[in-house]
Length: 76
Image (cartoon, helix red, strand yellow):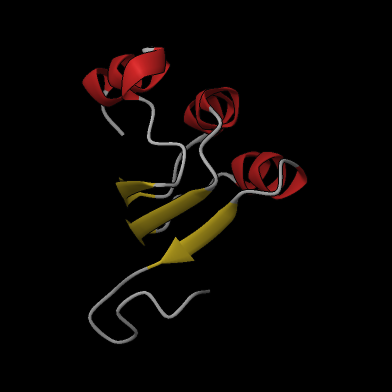
């Protein structure tokens, strides 16, 4: 995620509560912001080596779905 994406998310009127799309799996800092924004699903293309982020998102009940050309979002 980019800093501009994070600024967009923290504005209450622009929060996508249903889900968000990311190029990479969020890091732990972004994961905390996503949790606080009330987002329920994350779709991402590439992984990111941050086990804390995965743990935080799992504890918050946020669904993480990797999309790529093979499964086109069939879940992970």
